[in-house]
Amino acid sequence: MTEKSIPADWAFEFHGHRCPFMPIGYRMGVLAMERLGVKHESDHGFFVFPEIGEGHPQACMMDGMQIATGATYGKLLMAKTFYGKLAATFYHPNNGAVRVSLRPEFIDAMGKFEFFAYRKKGVEPSQIPAKVADEIIKWVYEQTDESMFKIEPKPDFKFSPVKGSFNKTKCTVCGEYAFDRYVRTKDGQPVCIPCSGYEK
Ligand SMILES: [Zn+2]
Ligand SMILES: [Zn+2]
Image 1 (cartoon, rainbow, N blue to C red):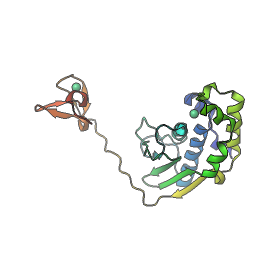
Image 2 (cartoon, protein in one colour; image 1 turned 180 degrees about the vertical axis):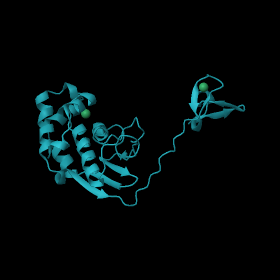
Image 3 (cartoon, rainbow, N blue to C red; image 1 turned 90 degrees about the horizontal axis):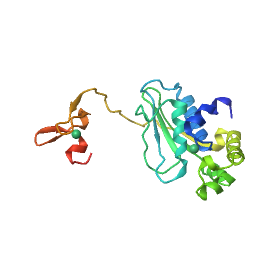
């Protein structure tokens, strides 16, 4: 693999530990940007939809995707589909969409490393010996894009982001501001969701 697909040291610091999944997500992001011809997103124009679910350990990939693309959770550019799959769709309104998934053969080969023997025993990545973590990360870096990923264009992919608004209203119960799309009415008065007693 090439240098540009390897996350910088600060990316590991931000992520918190050395694991193979953050760099895999990073590389997925780099590949998707190349395919779509887009640059690291400064503002609000590139979206990532990871298919990762809950209760399985590969969620670290999403930090790598955000670091590579700038399509961050905080900018509302990332939303999970909860399919429980190791894949993500990357979407740019002008340049289209591409889905990148991990090949089953790659997942199987990676699962044989000692790193996962520790993980299955419940050892957190930061507590795994550096030698063991670095072994699998180095192996991942040595694999080709073709052996790791399936890349599919998604010409029919559609997504409409929520239109932004700065309008807000003070809740008549707690006195705090809530943005208008979240304001509810109770006894004819505007209230925030927690004060309304309603579900979202
Ligand atoms: Zn991780
Ligand atoms: Zn309130």
